[in-house]
Image 1 (tube, one colour):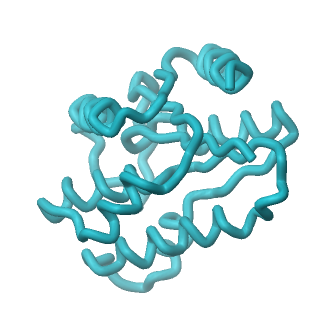
Image 2 (cartoon, helix red, strand yellow):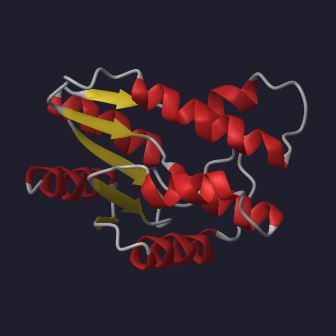
Length: 168
């Protein structure tokens, strides 16, 4: 199985791209556990919830049988949760740090925030997307993760992503 994580700041087209890639390749995708979890939480989230979210995301991914020999598109990853923790709380729990550094993905698609912001009750950073993009770029580079920048119109984004996946 080839696992591809789709990451970037809020409202940068990750979920749309994930769904489009899964449809294009007729392959499996894993949705973002955090969205499901937070929509049903019934209270403001706390730092301890990030570990629950990380474990839930891993469980979503691990539900795909190992013998699946195709592609798996993941609508987030552990690096995202690490960045979220560091941005929101100023630090990251050791377990999250380890997951961000060692959880296996074959490639990352880093979405730029060059599309319009779409309001959503779960989004927190409408005016900070460019800086957060730089945080993602720096983190992926620092961790020596293979990634492709995804930018432009929805059609351009899909073409770039398809080409990157075809090279894997």
